[in-house]
Length: 238
Image 1: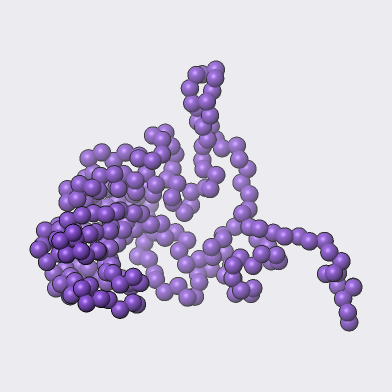
Image 2 (image 1 turned 60 degrees about the vertical axis):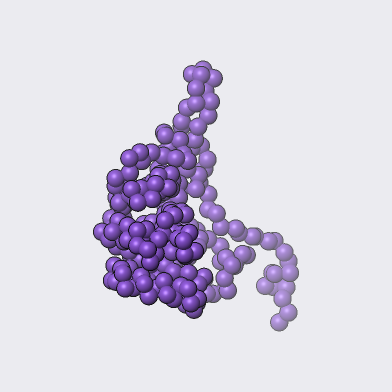
């Protein structure tokens, strides 16, 4: 953990005093503060962080979603892979098998989906990061913070569109980046790289139509096969 500056050390003390056990400190790597908040405490903590003169986090800079489905596992999880050629960017013999946890991974997510809020206090020039995990992996839902920061409107719509996380209380939760007829949520780790549907213009119907993808799935693991007599066992020196 990187040592905090004096300014953020004072902020951490104030957060510990005002929020107490509702805010669990996250490991920092950039001399700034991050806290994990439980879903039921989100609105109360955000209101306090905005309204208290000690904090005055009056600006919501960003809201982003996170899918921890394959966190800490092998980077390439495929049905088949090569044992020769490319080394997958790790030392040969140390690469984890598909689905195997990496021993060095210390962070254990509290669930599959999380939402991260980036706050800014213009008055004090403080930045703060809040992370909230959704309780249900199948139906991820969190309270909307749009009544606290109006800027959450499009941010929450973006997270809903890309991750399928629903924000309870949002007045107009529609897709933002994908088409209204789009199926699925493209930033989920289990969303197929080739997508589910493709669209084209049908001249007979005079409109755009959606169809199942015609791209064949393939294993995205590079494999090099060389035919070279230098590697023939019978030609090697004894």
